[in-house]
Length: 238
Image 1: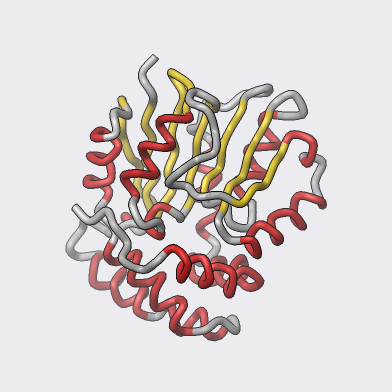
Image 2: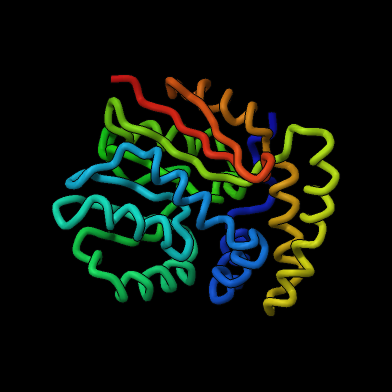
């Protein structure tokens, strides 16, 4: 089961700094806008309420962080964490255009070594980031550690179709991703890397097993777009 990304953290961080300014428009083009629908479906499943505390890892340009902040309200707290300063700069600019700044913090940090106490959050999320960390299993362990007993981990991530008839079309489309990205004024090689991390990452069933290996209970997953994306959830035992 592949858990380690051989590309150094520094190189991956530099990559995300480079693509930060065009990330949103490129992501819209690559996913055909479906990432917003997947996140909406995910939000329908997360047990978050007014006054809760949530952590959004690999928060990128902040879309999911802002969605969470809207739910917890001014009496709650949301922290968005990312290792890319330029991604966080975009997220901060978005946050300024909302009313959710009082309950939201954006910090630079390492998802494999979280700067939070045990049992701190009601919900911990990670969206399209787990495949790009050096050790996905370590990140899951950290997510569980900072989660309150009874809290939920939610991971939205690209996946690989299990249907053999669908797989060739999925594979062909992802081969086109670097070309699509180049049209959005990105370096083609940056999205070759992101295409490769998608293809090399674990299947949905394997990721569910990783959740279980991390002692996250009631682990399950839902697939979208014939398996091109998957939502995994798990809970910390009370």
